Length: 99
Image (cartoon, rainbow, N blue to C red; front, top):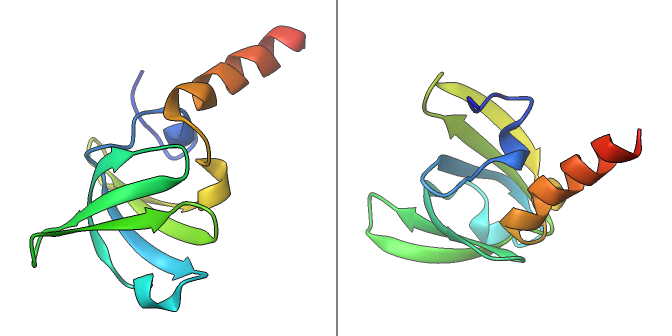
């Protein structure tokens, strides 16, 4: 399935470009790079310019992701991707089964 603005939260986000638009920690705002790892609570982002990895809590953040296949940009609230990546897919499947 192709990643789109509508389904990106159900896909793998490792490897995507990301920019932090807003965060509870103001020192993180404006940082950008490539997502290199994702845990339940955190994104690890490689800053390409400086070669440093920063850990960013998902909770409290608003992120701008770029979808490489279409070059579309999509804004995602960190709470939409909070939790383990594999559990996000399970949620949508379970919701659809109950209808």
